[in-house]
Structure formats: structure tokens, C-alpha cells
Amino acid sequence: MSVRIGTRGSALALTQTQQTADMLAAVGGFETELVRIKTEGDVRTGSLAQLGGTGVFVAALREALLADRCDVAIHSLKDLPTGGTPGLALGAIPERADVRDVLCARDGLTLAQLPEGAKVGTGSPRRAAQLRAARPDLEVLDIRGNVDTRLGRVPGLPGNSAGSVGGTTGDLDAVVLAAAGLSRLGRTEVVSEYFEPDVMLPAPGQGALAVECRLDDAPARENGVLVKDAIQGVLAQALAAIDDADTRLAVSAERALLARLEAGCAAPVGALARRKGSLLYLDAVVCSPDGTRSVRLNKATDGLTDVGAHLLGIELAEELLAQGVAEFAELGA
Image (tube, rainbow, N blue to C red; front, side, top):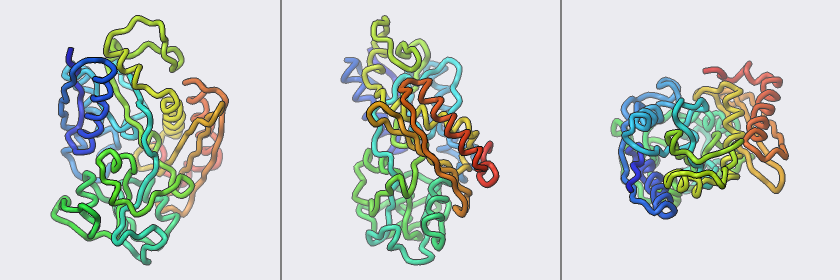
């Protein structure tokens, strides 16, 4: 038996897909084959807001799944739209990696040490808004490209040899990236500062991977909980084996909040849920794009089920909306 695994072709996508493929192969006892799929987000240029959101990295992979050109597809969970696709299911969400954002700056500078007017690049409105809130004097610039392309914009970073789109190199003082991606690529030596969640809340689903499959191959679940005695195929059993229940609970709450806010890619929304003992905690922030206004709230539940996690996300979103966040954030975009 060989399982075909769909992936984007970037270095990060291939690395995290191969790591997930190795986990599936180890527990399932089957061979795996990577199938590279070019997505709209890989072809077109421009900001994510202009392209129509993070879903541009997902649609082609989902089409390949439905057309039986691959058996599973690996996504960065933060790229996955909150709306499902008929015929497909989230077969597994492996244990989450580091959720934090990081600063990669010249000369090892931290955010506090960057000089006034320093140029910091990010393609994320969420990161940009929180950067501007922390340091209004910075010049925050919108950038695109893979990890090496972005790192190539900062002079003097360890192992920096790649140029960027259009030949622009060394023109920024720092960039902000996800810790998880750099860790998976073995590039954490470029990090000058890790942002704790009280400084910069991550994107919903950040640090987690989504293993999407066709419904017939998905593990049997009731209210998000695996049905242990269900008769399932080899692939479904392997998917169930690599699924992490606490990660699934956490990202379910975060994504439910995002869906209720109707937050498009241009909406600076951060969210992080974590299970501690018998409670699931959710922290969320909604900012104005310029970082001058924000509302941050938190909430907890003892309902450690898929329904409980979803209700937590929805209820916290309702509280944020009641605080007037729709007045200054680009919700429904």
C-alpha cells in the first residue's frame, strides 16, 4: 500500500509534509509518496488581502483530493479557511509546535532595541497591527515570499544566502515569522527574539498542521472524539494515531472564534487556546490595522469536547463584538 500525500512545493511545505508522512508511515506500515500541487497563492503575487485570503494556498490541494490525485493533503492549519469542503474531513491534527511569532533582526536586535523608524517586514495584518501597537515609531512594510525570500531582506542573518523577489535584498532591519516554520526548517539560529503571547497573539491555528482527507478515509468520530471500537481502514487508523486531542480542542476554539467574527485575511485577529487541567482557556485580540485600537479578552470552559470548544470560541467572539471591534477592524472581509 502506498499513500499519496499532497503538498505545496515550497521548502517549508515539503519539509513539514515529509515529517508528517514519516509519522503516518511509521504508525501505518505503508509507503508514502509526495505529490506536489501548485496553488494560486504560489503563482500570483500581491498581498494576501488582494489575493482573497489564505484560502488561495488550499483550494488546489482540496481539488486534488476530491479528484483522487492524492489521498491526504497537508496544510498549515492557519491557512485553512474555517468553512469545510463537502466530501472532505480533517483526518488528523498532530501535536502543535511552537505557537509564537519571532523577530529576525539584523545584529541580533530585539524589538525594544530596534532604532526609531526601523523597517520591519511582515505579510500578516495581525502581526503588523500588534507591531504598530508595541512600537508606533516603526515602519512596518507588507512583504510576500517564502521563508528564505523574507530572511534575504535582512542583512547579516546567519546562513542568509537567498535573494528575494525582484532582487531586493538587505533592505529591511527585521522580519517577523512563525517560530514553528523556522523550527521545522532548522533555521532557528536567525531568531533574535521570541514574542510571548502577551506581546503578540498568534494566528488561530498557528503552529499546527492539518491533515485533510476524503470522508471515506477519515477516522470515525462522535462530537470530535475518536470512536475506538469502529472498524476502519489502514489510513484512517494511521490518521487517528497521529491526532492530538488537546491540539484539536484548542484549534477548534480558535477557528470557531474566527468564523463567528467573519474575519477575513485583512482582519488583525489573534487567538490562542490552551488546555490546562480540566479547563480550556481561550485568549483573543482584535486590532485596528494601524494598531491604535484593540480589544483583548479571555474566557475558559470545562467543556472539553468539540462542541464545548466551539461554544467557547463563539461566546468569546460575541463578547468581542459586543465591545465594538467591528467598528475598527475589517471584519467580514
